[in-house]
Length: 152
Image 1 (cartoon, rainbow, N blue to C red):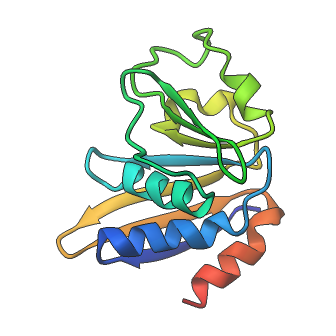
Image 2 (image 1 turned 90 degrees about the vertical axis):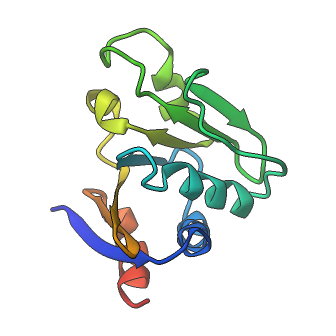
């Protein structure tokens, strides 16, 4: 059964703070699927995860490179799969999905058939005064995170 919660953030810093909270729950092999329109905060969220993992320097969207790799307390594989025509396109994504790092996948619905059920999905929507972020997963491993976020 899928669990979900919704969190509103009112600034980029609050979106990054949410990412840092989620980062405390991350372990090797975790995948976070990010969905949302342009400007919804996907890359801002990725910057918060990167900072929490001790990754120095700028983190920007891998729109043209598809994958950017960063070394921190856990390896971070930041992907933007918007330009992929089909999930079957051979890019070696599964090596990352089942690797020893954390994957952040922007526009993840484009490769959804490749993602395991343990994926943590985040749907970011821009409202006039906030970002609304719906977080869900089928994996009970994320239940403690959902409880923590619901209590905020």
